[in-house]
Image (tube, rainbow over all chains, first blue to last red; front, side, top):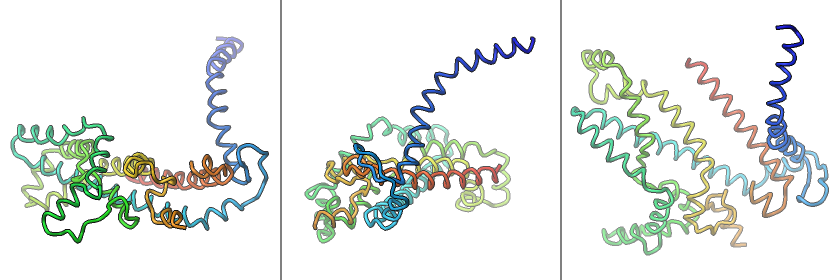
Length: 260
Length: 40
């Protein structure tokens, strides 16, 4: 192929991808550029933006509501990761330790089956349980712990934790299957060697199973981190859309603002 | 960020929050990439 023909072929290829690049630049990179420039301006969306230097950032780092919402988001992320890792791993380990393959199959299916229930149903169910006269408070009354009754979603000190801890016993079917597949991928030679060396029960879990599950653990931590930072639906539904500042996730700072 | 921008009409402030979030997420991504690299 001559140089001219090569150039023609290349230009044809570039012509085909040009529309994609134009849209990519217009709808993705240009808004990012605008946000970068706009961060240093005072702009109401209608009038011309006014350059104010670092004032937005000075305000941002001194913003009490933003500080509280960041703390809430961190608490949310950390607890979500713990709940996404520990219970599913323990259940996966228990299922994996079962001797009979059929029993493993049955338990696996039973734990995975609830995945068909839509998430919104779970959230609405937990909202019902958390109500003032809901099942949790009634149960507490029934067992003589009436003093522990709470407005689970109305008390700013516990509302955040109520929403995070929703979904007891926190066995995510997806995470369970990931951990289970990780445990299954441990070679039988390793397990046999561990058994011969006396690593059984908890010793095997600590020395073999957990270190072997690190790739799965990292995947789940990353997915949970992303998911929990994006998770706006539970606080939105649980609080009936009542929290105007939803990013605060029912935090006390917002309630304090309402009280003023 | 959403409320600051659309409800309060402070787009400039909203964009500064977005920028800070972008930097934080970028740092987290770099840390993760470094960890993944060191493991492999």
